[in-house]
Amino acid sequence: MPAKNRILVTGGAGFIGSHLIDRLLEKENKVVVFDNLSSGKMEFVEQHLKNPDFSFVKGDLLNPEAIERVCKDADMVYHVAANPDVKLGASDTKVHLDQNILATYNLLEAMRKGNAKRIAFTSTSTIYGEASIMPTPENYGPLIPISLYGASKLACEALITSYSHTFDMQAWIFRFANIVGPRSTHGITVDFIKKLKENPLKLEILGDGKQEKSYLHVSECVNAILFAIEKSKQEVNIFNIGSEDTISATGIGKVIVEEMGISNVEFTYTGGSRGWKGDVPRMRLDIEKLKSMGWKPAYTSEKSIRDTTKALISEN
Image (cartoon, rainbow, N blue to C red; front, side, top):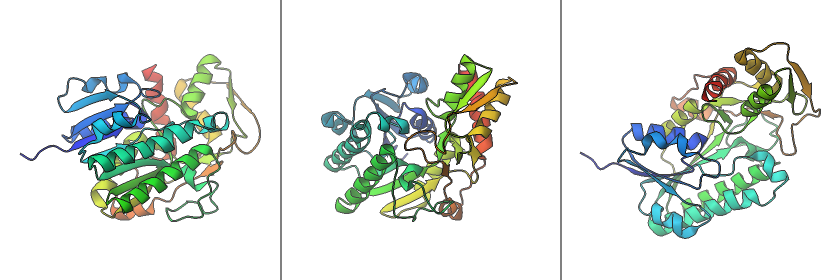
C-alpha cells in the first residue's frame, strides 16, 4: 500500500480551508492544518480531531520557527491563510502586508529550508483591478489592483512564482471570484443576513446596488482546485476559478429576502458606483482555460447565493 501524501494546509480552519481539508481527508491523505484561529474556527475542523490522518497545529505564519517545524518534507502545501477582508486595508494599511505578504514569504522560506517543493495558493480576482476586458482571462494585463488586499495577493503571486523558478518548486495559483457557501464568515451574504435579522423591514446596500459580480459555491471551488492540480504540470500553473455569470448586489438582496421568508423589505442605498474604497464594481473571470481541460461549474451565481443563504440560516 503506497504511503499517504503528507499535506500541509495553512488557514485550514477557515471557510475555504476547512472545506478543502474535508476533501483531502476523503481522498486518504495525511493532513496537517496550521492556523492561528484569527478568522478560522475550531468548530470547522473538530469533526476530524479523532482521525489519525489529521492533526491541528495552532501557530502563526509570522513566527518563522513555528511554520518551519510543520513544513519540513511536506508533499504538498495549500496556502489558504490570509486576512480576507478587502475593506480592512482602507483603515489598516499594514494588515495585508503582514498577514498576506510577510506570511507568504515566511512560508516559502520554510518550504525552501524544509525541502517542500509544491504549493497551491489561493489568490483573488482583485489582482486584476478594474479590468477593461470582461470576462477577464489569466493573461490580462497590466495588473493594477485598486485595493491593498489585491496588491498584497499580487505580491504573494510574484513571490511564489519567483521562488518556484529560483528553488525548483512547482506552484498552482488560483484567482478566485467571490466564493460563498456554508461556514462563510464574511462577505455580502453574511452581511445581508445579519442586517435583515436585526431589521427585517429594511436592507441597506452599499453603493448603488448595481455592482455585478461572479459568485461560486465553495464545493465547486474545491473541485476546481483539485482538478487543476491533477491535470496541470507546468512549473507555474495559473487558473481563474469562478462561475459563468454574475449577479447584482440588489439581486443578492432579493434572493436572501426570499430565502429568509420575509416580505415588504425596503432596499436603501448608500450611493455611488462602488460599495467602499477598493471595491471593484464589475467582475467576471474568464474560465475557458479550466473548461478546456474538462472542468465546468455546475452552479450559477444565483444558485451559489441561494444555497449559501439556506446553509447560513440553518447554521445560526
